[in-house]
Structures are given as structure tokens and as C-alpha cells.
Length: 435
Image (cartoon, rainbow, N blue to C red; front, side, top):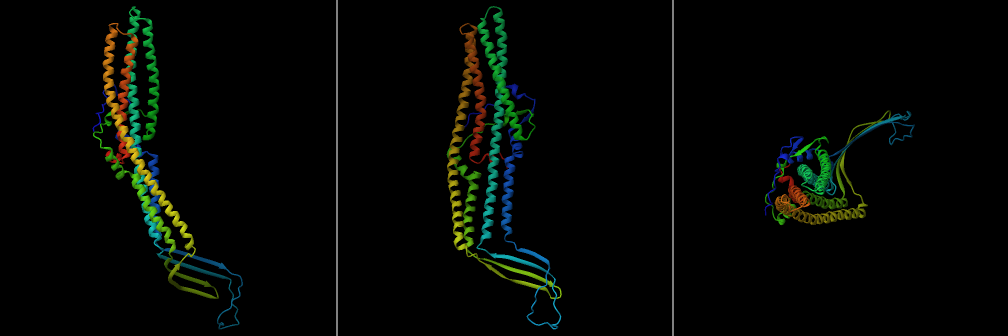
């Protein structure tokens, strides 16, 4: 199946619009990515996840602690195990100083450290994929905004042309009435239609200004920048695949689907981490002690080394709750994964039908504009031969205008609909060669 070719802007007045900054869709996407606040937040979350992974890895490193104190001491009662050489000399102790250095190297703690590293690495990958998913959303939002700007410009152009025609007709009708060839009522009807077009023009101009301000904010440009969207950026997407192919692409390429897969693996590791509390902790320790109590004792070069084993007996009845909590988290992630799978299928179907509808609107609008122009020629000819009233002529002109606007909107909507389908399939950035 192939989309009907999208008509490039054919009215020279638009293509020759040199006032303002001309911008292509590709440039708009690039600027929006560079200036996106949500993407900056996504990068911050990646950095946070990377830091958590580093913290988990650092738990494998030795712990080294240093401490020392200088103390003033009151007159203590000192009893020596062996009598001194001169028992008549009293021992006076009024100060003491000591220093300690202790090194502990973890050897085994139920593989809790290793599980923590693996879990952190899975969550870091998930955060990176979340950022990629956010980028796809930014790209699609930019395409939609670019399309809205294009449609606002197209609306403005068509209405301005119609207004010029209507005013020219008003001048002709005024001359005809002056020469007694047209009823005053017919001239007033024409003037009323011109007024309605002017009111419509005011609304369209306001919409264009708001759309342009929003676009400038998104791109990080000054609000007063006048943007001229390059219509050649809106290219025919070409052939589209079957809906089953897009569903398969989504399952393979959707970053949120991949991210939740990593979160599920992290939750599975979380269960093992909780169970690690059932096991004792083993570490190798070493240290150095120095002590100086003037006139009493001095200790130097006192090195210590050994093996430390610890076990929290309360883990026998407390760990079960942590394991149950970890299993519940895994069940939640699994349920979220199944829900996301259903949502993806629904989104693909909705986007696919939206694209087919946009294609149909183009086909209908193209026929309508041809019919509208032909109808206006026939009505104009009959009016010139006094076979129809001025009301019939004005109605025919209004129908022709509406068909022109409908075609412009349908062309832009088809572009957006196609890119929505690509985004739902997780291949929008890849298709547009955006890294």
C-alpha cells in the first residue's frame, strides 16, 4: 500500500516568503533535542544510575579506617600483675595517646555485593533506554509542532487569497450597483461575506502567532523570531508496512519495552540479594595499634591480622519479609510488562488506522478541490448569464475555499500520522537517522 503523494506547496506566494527565518524539519528536530528540558532530566537520571552502579562496585573495595586520640586522665588506681623493680616508686598517669589503623577486605557476604552490582547495571541500562524513549517523544512533538506551524501558514495564505478575491469582487459589485446592474441586497451579501472572511483571518493570525511562539520556545529561539517552515521537509513517506510488521518492530525496538525487561532482571536479582541475608559475612582484617601512656607503658609496631566472621541471627526470621517484598516487586514489574505489551498493540493499531484515515482524507480532499473549482466555474458562468443569484456564487466560492484548506490540513496530518506510527513502533529516530 502506498500513500497518495503529498502535494508540495504550489502557491508561489508561500514559497517566495523570504521574511523571517526559514527552517527545515530536520533543523527543528535538532534544535528541539539540544534544548529539551525533559532530555536534560533524562541525562541526569542516567548519571544518577551510573553513580549507583559505581557505589555498588565500590563495596568490593577494602575499608580502611584511621583513628587516634589524646586523653587527659584522672589519678587512676593501677595494679600491676608483676611487681615493679622499685615498688616504692608510685606510678603517676595523667595522660594517654593512642592511634589505630584498621583494614577490612570483604570476602563473602552471600554474594550480596555482586548481586547489587548486577542490579545497578540493569537499572543503568533501563535509564539509558528511558532517555532514548524520551528522545523519540521529543522528535514526534517537534514534527507535530512543525506541522501545526505549516497548517497555520497554509490557512493564512488561502484565506488571504480568498479575501483579496472577495474585496476585488466587492469593487466589481459596487460598480455594477452604481450602474443599476446589481441589486443593493446582492452587494451587501458580498460585503457581509468579506467581513466574515476578515474575522476568520483575525483568528487565523492569532493562532499563527501563538503557534510560532510555542515553536520558538521549544527550539530555544527568541520568542519574536518569525519562522518560515520549509515545505520541502514534508516529504512523502512512501510505502507502509502491514500492521503485523509494525507490531513486530515495536516489540523489537521500543525502548520502554527493553527498559522494562532490564527492570525485570533487576527485580529478579533483588530476590537473590534479599536471600543473601541468610548467609554469614566473611572478611579478612588487618591493623596497626600504637599506644603511649607516659611513665607507664608504650606500645609500637603492634600489627594485627586475622579473619572476621559475622552472622546476624535475627535474619532467620527477618529476611523472609524482605524476600517477600522483593518477589512482590518482581510481580509488579511483570504485570507492568504485560500491560505495556497490550498498550503497544493498541497504540500500533490506533496509529495505523490514523494513518489510513489521513490517507483517505487526502484522496477525498483532492477530489473535493477539483469538484469545488469546477463547481465554481459553472456557477460563475451561470451567474454571468443571470441564471443564478449572487448567493449561489458566494456559496460556491466558500466551498472552494474550504476544499483548499482541507487539502492543506490533510497533507500535514498525513505526515504527522506516519511519524506517530514510526514512534509507536520505536523506529522514529532510526528512520530519521538521529542518534
